[in-house]
Image (cartoon, rainbow, N blue to C red; front, side, top):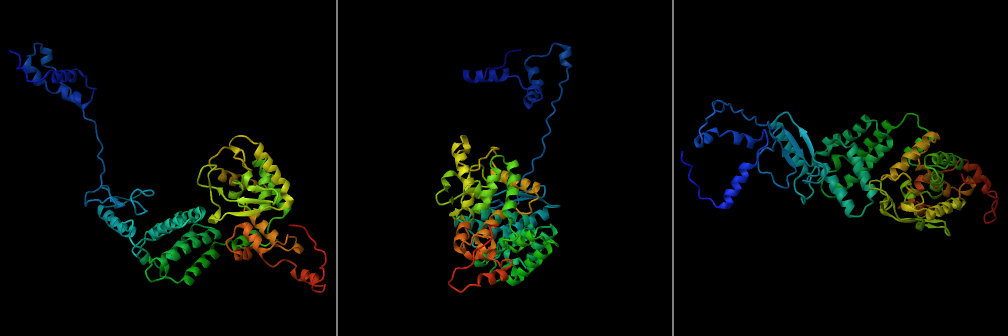
Length: 485
């Protein structure tokens, strides 16, 4: 048989074809199947002479099973700004923030495509697609919340307050209420939020925190037209407060201790605060969990009134040993990795004092911090464990120490004790410092806050008043008695 006619290919094309023919296909691949299939082509060029070869059966190639890919339903052209998608398996995917790519996407499964499309339509209305849409009652309560958090961030509000608002929202707001348009919210929705707190056995302090977050949101949304001309949740502020008070009573423990009652009332009399002996007991237990620094951490917290996040952020350059002051211009960032810091609570820097009786404690901490090498140099309370979440770690250690010492107060009560003892008159075992100074040292924005929390009637005030007024006005009073405690 004459050879097949030569095709008009250049040498480069011939070389490429030769190299392709020489490549051995992988077993089981599609290429192997294509190479084995065209037996008829081989027979036209050279007839088979081997009977066994002529009767050989070519094994069929088994194609791999490919699972079908679930794709979004092409019901309408999806715009880039659309945060909602419907999938062919009746799932709905959406961005709760209302903007694609912002936050964490959520998925919902529905029994039918009709239900999925109905849910998607409702989500598009509640999320109000469009970044620059004007506030209106058609916006969901979630959109109003996101707008408020963004506004607070731009206004330079304290990062800790913003995180607390977000945490209260994420933990306690029912999804059905959050996705409801503001104009459709009613008193029943407001009550549903707090009924959920009762059902989840939330504490009274949690109820107060959620009410504070929603109160801030209601004022923000009312001023910007999210509720139209009506009140938030179509309910007056007085009725909303009534629901909160009732929920607080339901979540309150039947038999409250003095410490629990003071916490619930947000009023901290000196008689309920820990005494110096109580503080020493807590310090001894903390020293076991934070060797070398635990006891001094507790004592400095008691002597200065600093919050825990502010204490562990103190460095040697913040201490003025001549005036017994601490420059509080930062606190450890709870969300960041050590040693990342943020502005103090409320974004207000201040100068705090510490009692002179505890000056040796501060001097020893400064000396140790300056003598230390490595990453812990300069920090009064170094990160001995090398953990990123050092603030959380110290909080956990203090809770363990508190439990072992059977200490009924929390760490924050050291701050309450500092304020109460500083303000209490000397006749009652305090230092008798003036209200304005103590309020400034604590970092309160208003002296009324300090007064409401710590200026309270003292025990035995009638007898003490009788003794102090026994002399004529303008003469020297009798000697004071008592010691700080």
